[in-house]
Image (cartoon, rainbow, N blue to C red; front, top):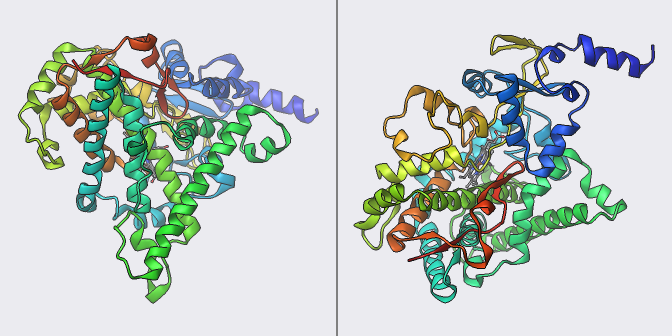
Length: 475
Ligand code: HEM
């Protein structure tokens, strides 16, 4: 029997995964799943498969997705031994390791230990003036655009804001997107990053292939990646020059304490490592925050009752409000959670590998080395935890049940939970409170052919509004 015959028999009969329900084609190949990824439809496709096949669905010859909340919790439990799958390594530039992309638990623990202090809730308090300055400027720019054009593209402005914030916190200098006020090549590149990640995960050698095959989709994606890295490189060099010259005390950044490792026994990272982590922060932190804020405004504007309550809550806040004024507002936080639930910026499967001894999940024995995942898009639509799951109902978060908390994974979970979630929440709470204080009558615009259909998300690894814009009017 030749290799192909043996492989066919294995995939059809012997492979334990073959018995798990799922589309017939996924016994043989995962290309159809990858096709859905490039189209930006994978989470919805997997969600539909769960409606047909139940709580566990085979999505590739060695890959299963779970909609079962207990399985999702187990997969993301600290110490349960489910490591990130090799898919993440393909996201890093030519296999380089970062906090986000590493699959090595030791590397991860060490890197996380170094990076988590500077981005902790406590430390971010020191950086609040920098963050606030950008958020206030964003509201001013939105106001200007509404008064000049009748409507503002809030997706554009939130993207500028989130990029400027993470740029300034990483490099000590913002990208000045807000001042410029128009999409630069850099912003277009960032918006292409999600697509680049999807492509690179399927074609890991995309950078090399693009040199041989002049396909514009490859070319665009790789050029975008190169420009982002180059920008980070230049910025870090500039910042480091300031530190090395030592006559100016630079603004503290998320990396300041990590420069120049080895000097006086100091722990830290090399310049190249800092560049990679900074690029990782920009890619993971700017679009996700902007998309969440955009869908928050959208979700509120298309639900007048919700808007009335939120506007009432923020109306009497002081004009120079700070994060401490909004941090514990009950309705604002309920709206934030409901946005993260119904419009998760990362709706996709988060693939992990079962430990060598295998695992019991959803009443099935899953062999060691199997790729297992669950996705926020489906978990957040679990009707048992979230009745009327398709409805935007912030009130459901006033007294969240155990089931709701368990099924809620907008920032991932366990040791790989999002490191930037405190920063994201500060930006989102401040942005939303200031927006509805300034524009209590905000509503979706129909100018320039804008339709609600455009807000139907495209979902690569991250989600983004299909129309790449969200026009809102102020009165
Ligand atoms: C609303 C905004 C955000 C959402 C929805 C979000 C979502 C997520 C999710 C779901 C994960 C887990 C990914 C996985 O397990 O595969 C994650 C991890 C991560 N996020 Fe975020 N994120 C947001 C904002 C940010 C920000 C602002 C930053 C940057 C400072 C950031 C940096 C990271 C990093 C570095 C990781 C990897 C952490 C690790 O593996 O230890 N994220 N994020």
